[in-house]
Length: 307
Image 1 (tube, helix red, strand yellow):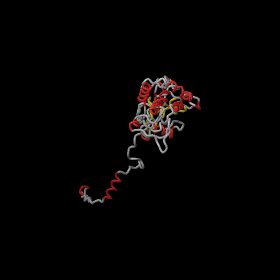
Image 2 (cartoon, helix red, strand yellow; image 1 turned 90 degrees about the vertical axis):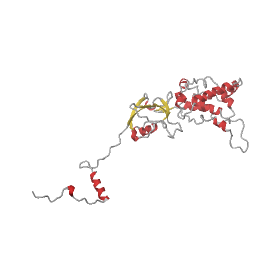
Image 3 (cartoon, rainbow, N blue to C red; image 1 turned 60 degrees about the vertical axis):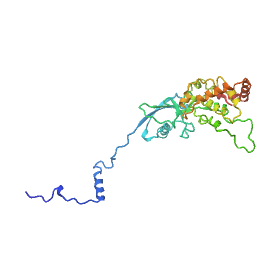
Image 4 (cartoon, rainbow, N blue to C red; image 1 turned 45 degrees about the vertical axis):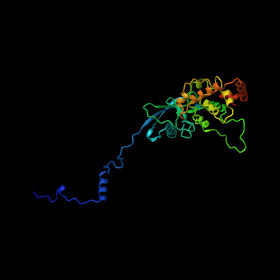
């Protein structure tokens, strides 16, 4: 047989390759085959769908409230419940209505009931689940639209405690502020941080039963905040006014308020301190003081009728 004129591949001398040549060979090796040009060669990130069942009510339609279900991809959404609601409103259903503002747990606007517990949507993480995440407005409150509760009664009750510093004297000439000791200032910790989101109010069964008369945990917490303030000079008048069967003593220590507070405060503890201070300070002279306080503003006696 005629000998082959070409050496075997293993016998051929190997010429040195430059780094540019090696890169070119590698590029050809990973080039897509014919017919699949332009196809991505890496796996796409798997979608993570999550269902949300959201309370819907439109007063203009005069229809019954209902739960509407939405599905969004958590891979394309922020981690918080408020992120999901904003995504649904921006990309799925612009008619969805809810309150939000700061996104940092400061304003209290986005308070709602999520999977049966009151909280701030901006502070609650989305917890993926096979079942739909249920979102409703704050319980036992009138609904303006969708997830927006009517908090008029709550704000009127807050106004009724006169939440500002009340003095019987005035500052001396040249004084710019009222001073207090560090110890007195420390007494206000755990009370001044309240953001009036109404999570505790609408989780309290006592408030559900008597919302027009019982002041509720948040308002009583704020009432005690001013009673405990050493700079305020109307302590006795404040105590006399709040010493009422309905305003204060509808609290039965159920503790729902403390369990759901998004700021980690303890309204139930403040109410206990308030009751203790009433018991320690009470005198018969309070009857006249209370009558005088009521006469000054009769509408102050009910959040529904504040003038």
